[in-house]
Image (tube, rainbow, N blue to C red; front, side):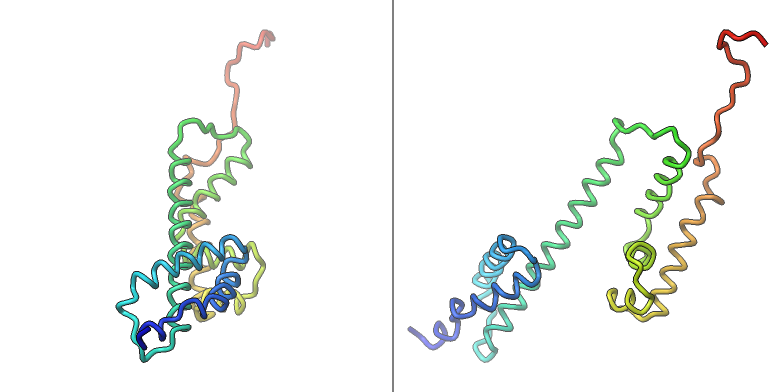
Length: 181
């Protein structure tokens, strides 16, 4: 056994990789899959491993990158599915004014840029304080407040910019309901 292969002792690092994967995924089966994918990537990139570096941080960095790639991939897939659902002709808009209005707001909310949508969700839906929401997003409080203001303004524009999309109340002008007037 050469010194290079003895320094690349991945088996000894498996417990640490499993612990970190479980922390990231919060599911044992997903954690095992994540470790497997990370090991495949590590062996594929083995030539780039520098024997002077510690193996554990290198493997954990690869595991983290695989996890982030998976999150992004799932997010993109969900977005594609949502867009496909929006283009479906099978959906008929509900007749109730409040349901239609809520659908318009939901549509506008989904169309917000990710940063604004995340900020508004954390503050308005999750009830986090500005400081806590800024912490979650890794942004200054002022940046969070700016994103919130832009998101709220975009939602307010439903009234100003899209009056033709707001539900109109039905009026019967000349009906034939069998009643003589």
